[in-house]
Amino acid sequence: MMSAFSRRRLLSGAAATAGLAAMPISASASTRVPVTREEHRVVIVGSGFGGGVTALRFAQAGVPSLVLERGIRWPTGPNAETFPRVTTSADKRMFWLGSGPSLFGISVPPFERYTGLLERVPGHGMDIMCAAGVGGGSLVYQGMTLQPSQEVFNANLPERLDYSRMDSVYYPRVARMLRLETAPDELVNSKTYLPSRIFARNVERAGYALEKVPMPIDWTYALRELEGDMKPSYTNGDSAFGVNNGGKHSVDVTYVAAAEATGLARVATLHNVTDVAMARDGRWQVFVDRISTDGTVLEKKIITAKALVMAAGAANTTKLLMRAGAKGAIPDLPDGLGTNWGSNGDRIYFWTNLADDFGTPQGGPVVYCSKEWDDPGTANTIIQASIPPLPNIRSTMLVGYGVSEGRGHFVYDSVRDDAVLRWPFDGDGVLYQRIQQRASDIVGPGSTLLDTTAVYPSTWHPLGGASMGTVCDLAGRVLGHRGLYVLDGALLPGNAAACNPSMTIAAVAERATDELIAEDAGVVF
Image (cartoon, rainbow, N blue to C red; front, side):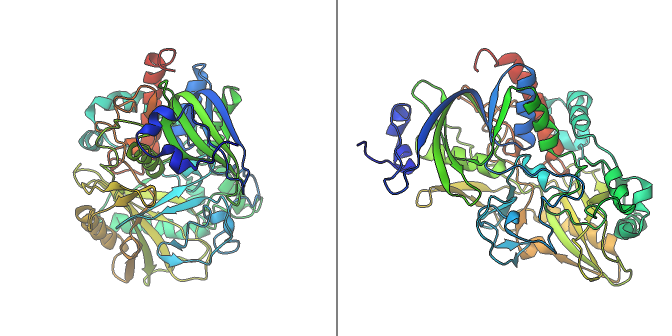
């Protein structure tokens, strides 16, 4: 019988590069996990903003693809209980295979292993929060869909992206797909949106700019909640882990659904990519564990493709490529791989207000923002976000993010067979001071701010690691590697120009897929 090889042994050393295509992998005698092989034209790893855009635009151009998603589908609808409710049904659905022992630095009870929504990726100096599931980060993000100004965009992203074309073609294309709307006044003036109104009043009192935030939400769902047609999900702020009632135009129900409807894009859920490699013939190999919802490996797959699109999120795309480079599975990856990583300047505050009573519950997700974008070097945005239904503790959330020069990098750890983030102390210090000042001005006297990011350094908006200009070109082509692409947050160089990153990730992917379809389809893949 053929000798058993672990995936680590198979991939170790430069010699593996030449032998991957021919060397089979056998499961150990104790597990008897079957090993299968597949071939595809294009494989896309991840189904979030980058992967969803890529799958749809390739399919519309007649290019079939297989989308590998490690998580599950999370279908919603009126009165659904798909997503966990933080205060009443916190359970295994919250975390990816037991990876979340803390949230905002607060320990939570251990749950049984499950392919849940959120993975905590630990680092030195900063942890990263990553989503799992069809739709990626769009499942759990609040939905702030902001387009940078030209000045801030050009100061932080390559001017060769051509802001004028991004503004006239690609940002509007994303806005149409996500069907952006601002919250109607009828909703904002309702009882549970008092915190939004207090925030708006305080912002204007402090002399800062105020505007409504475009959101990928059909707000009639929230209005129907007010009328009693559906159980509360928007109007009580119980959407930190997803909106149960539907009406949220997340990637799974927009880009991914449209891609699947063409018949040319297939999404394989519970397919956890563990390694990527270059085969002897120059094609790409993807090593996949098909798992059950408790993480048990049911099948090992070796999938070969002409083109490989890495869209697993900034952390996991970077980690997979660094693992492949360190072990020689993909030779000659650019030296900048793992660098130019940033947190997007995330700051999350707990705002306790003794002067006013916010009341409970609090409507959400987000209504207003305050932009300070005049100086591209310190441009920042502050928003108010609801907290889940709790007893009245006179508190709500503020979130800030923006432009920072702070950068971290990943280091490959051969013992752990993993790449680990290293983040410098006070890496976002200059930006933090400005956000802190603005937040203090907004909350005013009679309030206190708890900076949860200082207590627990973490980010929900990781960017960089395989960024354009150092690892990839502007269309996501990995330099020197035909048919290998990065189309997710890893491509952006450390910040999203004072915005939450989703719209820019999607717009850059829209731009890239136009170029790849015109120049690479039929030639490279």
